[in-house]
Image (cartoon, rainbow, N blue to C red; front, side, top):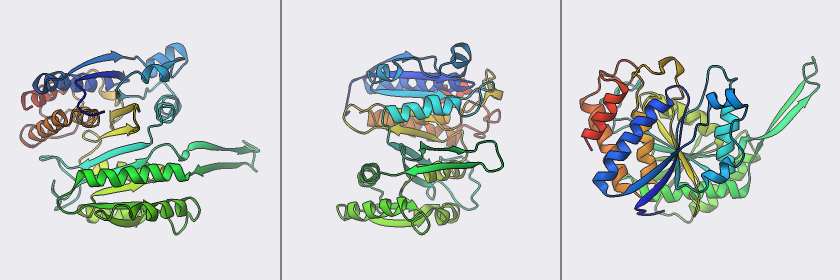
Length: 358
């Protein structure tokens, strides 16, 4: 979708502090839509822990079909202290990713001005890359089972699934994204896998990678084993432009990425179906943080960053850039810290500051 002048957005505020940060993201959306001259409408859905405790369902019947009517989905957070871990993640987040075929997980790793990184001597110019994670295969396909469960002879299997189609579409999208990103330091796409040990599934990734790389002579193809990637992300993050990787490895290295960019309070991501008519979902990475609920202390920067991503991939790149610039002014000149309760401002005040700097 390019240049669409009216957006239909589904909003899932979710649990804990999710509704608080969602409110600030929507506040910024309202302000930037006036400045950039587009309209939008939102529909709220109460899916999350409270609804699950009340009804026993993670997603009601017809939920996915209803979401297909929207241009994009904005998610605040899911996770409830009274709901067993895994139920909401699998029954809501993973279910939506799979049903809506959101096969790209996009995670910018960008250090904003004024934000501390644990990496000594590194600054915003050093930490600015993007991870493209395959989002519908690998261990997350849910293939496996038990034999002789709860006995001394128990056997458990969890099978990673890789398809040529799944590898190719993710790798090709990553090459196209690297080309569009057009890093002035040079376009480089790094495949992160473990071809020396995972000799079947990752050999498929490697062969697909080699075939597709020939079509993009303007992009430098690069390769890291995943363990080496973890070392280089800490030692030389400036090496990376775009990383493409498998679902499981992407899950792990993006949390490392969040820490080097200043923590989960600033990290945002998108679950993207880039196909025509596909519906994508954008969210802050920090989770529901229930201990901070209702205190006006949680950091909304990641949530506002997720809204910037939504705009960028929903036909409003100018609005997205305006929001991203305002975020960096606020982190660089206003906020004392990115930690909850130490920002120098409350949640609502940070949202207002971003609006003022649009």
